[in-house]
Length: 210
Image 1 (tube, rainbow, N blue to C red):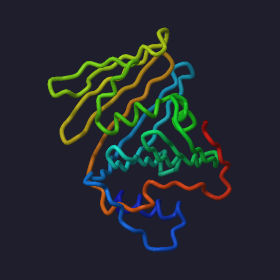
Image 2 (cartoon, rainbow, N blue to C red):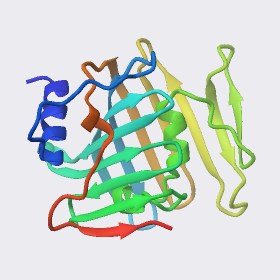
Image 3 (cartoon, rainbow, N blue to C red):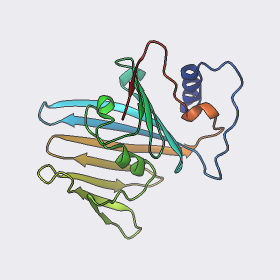
Image 4 (cartoon, rainbow, N blue to C red):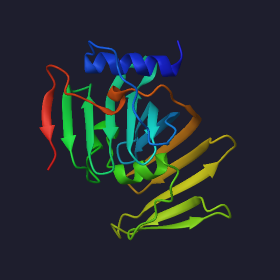
């Protein structure tokens, strides 16, 4: 069974579908299935965690991430829009919904990884902002960024590019580091209405972000 087939089955299970799904209009954007892997390390605690991130990207509209540990153990299902996030944290049976901040994804990654930074990295965009200054290569791609948001705790982001969309990204500060490897990227079709809808599973505690 392919990764695409597994993700489609998982989406149907989470939504409790009882009718045939309809195809979503993508407005000309090509949905992508992106297979990645991350390793996070808490430097103070010397703790390291590894997870697989399977991403479905509808450019500039939505992102779905399925986060799993070794042997397919499910950690979280995450759906992001430009200004909103929803995720079901399967490890604690909690469901989170609302606007996002830099701390929103701490329960998923055990670190404060800014969702806005993840959004731009997944889109292949330069994440430069008022607080994040970046250096680009000859092709206009970011190769290194330094954040000044917390002067005594600077965060650096670096990129190493390979062929066929493969790349390695490192996010580091004095407290943690995250290594994010993009392994493959292929078109994802057919896209379903349920792909970017995440309802609260039964028995999950609901948390609303303000």
